[in-house]
Amino acid sequence: MTGARETAARDLEGAGVLITGAAKGIGAATAAAFAARGAVVYPTDVDADRGRAAAAEYGAAERFKVLDVRDEEGWGRVVAEMEADGHPLQVMVNSAGAAIRASLADTPLDGFRRMVDLNLVGTFLGVRTAARHMVAGGAVVNISSLRGVVATAELGAYGASKFGVRALTRVAAIELAHKGIRVNDVCPGSIDTEITAVPDFDHVDVESYVRTIPMQRRGAPEEVAEVILFLAEPRSSYITGVDLLVDGGTGAGVTTPTKNNLDKNTEN
Ligand SMILES: NC(=O)c1ccc[n+]([C@@H]2O[C@H](COP(=O)([O-])OP(=O)(O)OC[C@H]3O[C@@H](n4cnc5c(N)ncnc54)[C@H](O)[C@@H]3O)[C@@H](O)[C@H]2O)c1
Image 1 (tube, rainbow, N blue to C red):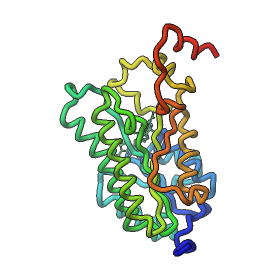
Image 2 (cartoon, rainbow, N blue to C red):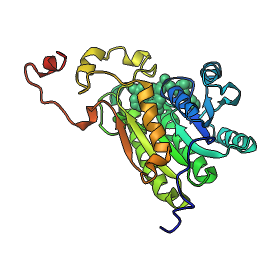
Image 3 (tube, protein in one colour):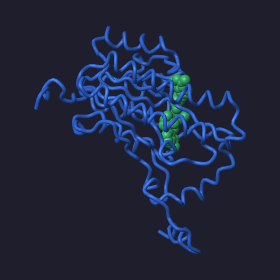
Image 4 (cartoon, helix red, strand yellow):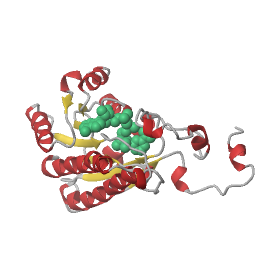
C-alpha cells in the first residue's frame, strides 16, 4: 500500500486537460467528451480557425491554443499558461497526427521524415512535457494505431511512427509510475475522420476494406473518445503501459478466405 494515497488517480472534475490535434476528428471528439465530464479542457491544434470553432461548441474557445506538436518551445508555453490559470497539467491526450500512404519504394524521404516528426517526435515532446510538468495522479493517453500493431503494406512510414508511439508509451509508463502518472495508448482501427481524405488514399477500396472488419463498419471518433476518457479516469487506476485496440475486432485475427465467407459477413 506504500504511496497509494499520494499516487491515487485523480478525478476529471476541474482537471487541466491538454489535447493536441483538437480541431477535428478524434481529438475534437475527445475534447468535447472531457468537457462534458467537467474537465477544464485546453484544446490545441495548428488549425486555429477550426480549432476555435470546435472548442466553442463545448465552451472552451477562449482556452484554445495554437500548438504545433513539433515545436519544442510551444509545449512549454501552453503548460505555463495552464499553470498560470490555476489548471496545471493533469491529463494529456496526444492526438495530432497525419498519414501518408505509399509503398516503401515510392516513399519520398521528406514524407517519411514528416511522419516521424509529426506522429513520433510530436508525441515524444508531449510525453517529455508530461514527465516534467504533470501533477501526481495524472494520465497521458497517446494515439497510436492498429497500423502500429499490425504491419500494413503501403503504410510503412505511418506504421513505423505508430509502432514507435507504442514504445514511447511503455518506457514512459515505467519511468513515471513512481510519480503516480499513468501512460497508455489507444490503437484505433478505421475511424471515420478526414485523415484519409488525401489523394494517397484515393485507390483504397473502402467497401471491401469494411467487409474485412469483423464488426462490418468503421468506428466513430466518439467511440475512441470514450476509451481515452476511461484511460484518464480513476476507473483505470491500475492500468499503465498498455495498448487498447479500438478497431471493431480487426486486430483480433484473420478470417481464412473461403468462396463465400466475406459475402456471408455482409448478409446481416
Ligand atoms: N482516423 C483513423 O482511422 C485513425 C486510425 C488510427 C489512428 N488514428 C490517429 O488518431 C489521431 C487523430 O487522427 P484523426 O483521424 O482524428 O485525424 P484528423 O485529420 O481528423 O485530425 C488530426 C488533427 O491533427 C492536427 N495536426 C496536424 N498536424 C499537426 C501539428 N503539427 N501540430 C498539431 N496539430 C496537428 C490537424 O490539424 C487535425 O486537426 C492521429 O494520431 C491518427 O494517426 C486515426
